[in-house]
Image (cartoon, rainbow, N blue to C red; front, side, top):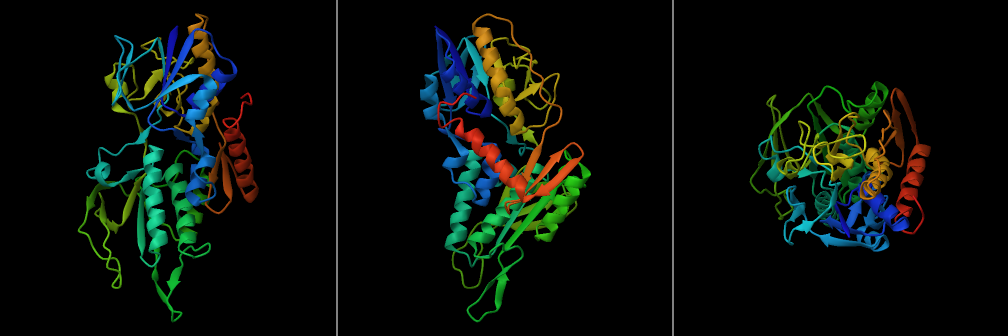
Amino acid sequence: MKDLVLIGGGHSHAIVLKMFGTKPLPGVRLTLITDVLYAPYSGMLPGHVAGFYDYGECHIDLRSLCEFAGCQIFVDRAIAIDLSKNLVICQTRPPVNFDLLSVDIGSTPATLLVPGAAEYAIPAKPVPEFLISWNQLISARQNHPEKPLRIAIVGGGAGGVELALNMQSRLAKKAGLGNGFNAGILREDGRVKEEKLEIHLFHSGAELMSGHNKRVRRRLKEIMISRGIQLHLMEKVSAVEKQEMREITSDARCPMPSYQISCESGLKLECEIVFWVTQASAANWIRESGLATDSNGFMQVSDCLQSVSHPNVFAAGDIAAMVNYPRPKAGVFAVRQGKPLFENLQQFLLKKPLKPFAPQSQYLALIGTGNKRAIASRGNFMWESPLLWYWKDWIDRKFMQKFSNSTHI
């Protein structure tokens, strides 16, 4: 019996499990080590933030998927790999032995270099922790719509921009502002009491979304400005500090924490919550385990998704860095790697030649703007239409349906 151990329930591993369920391999014992039972699907998360999808619609039930695949599941967090003994070291349970290992644990925003960011900012990844904080904010907003709220988002890539637009859409609805952009709350006498929602986005670059073409960058900047999202470009955040507890309004007796963002330019902003959506970084234990990594700590893999230093270790998704095909950290690549990863894991176990995989050089990004519209971006191409959002919705729902039944991928 050979032990194939999967660390992480990312998109690639979800596809691997589904394909093992439809094409099992005799003599192989499957084990998934995951710290969550429901894996978020990145394509639908902005829509979930905006309130278009509920939790179940945008999460993969890993327990049910493991049952389908005949895979045992250990709910724990992997914290190291002992490559000399072929053991995965977990946070709470005993070490897990493997003959073949695959890693798909995603990435997290790089925060450690900015003082206070790791302590006080909420990173966009890991997604489960982010959603806990986001749901707490939604609940507080619903219970106290009279209180003003200032949100800071650090990072002006596609993730930060999409998060800002979808957060604004959801919070405006919760406050009863309709589409609500730049609106105030009316008092009983009919006068506007105060502005209730501010969103500030900080970006160290001169332009948003540097990975996209000029038309896309310009259009999304226009949309954000038109909705009152305050952009702070060419502003590098240098510190996040917690302020004294303070009362929000004269008639509110419930204080809440406040944070101050400081930039290298001298700009300072006080806000109630800080979200961090900067460049992705890798878990430290990948490099510390002795696996070959790139300068950012991501595992270096060959065209077959196999570690360049340890043949019995594979990787996919954000944590993997294909040596010959460097690509952005985007969910579309993790989805495309699922089938090649499955095939090469089986080929390895059968002692057959591995199959190289070449990811596409360009990909179509569908960027939701929080109002059931989307912008398509690919190379120098841009298109904006409500039809794009419904197309994206159809694509995402079709993908998720694969994990709710026994349909072949």
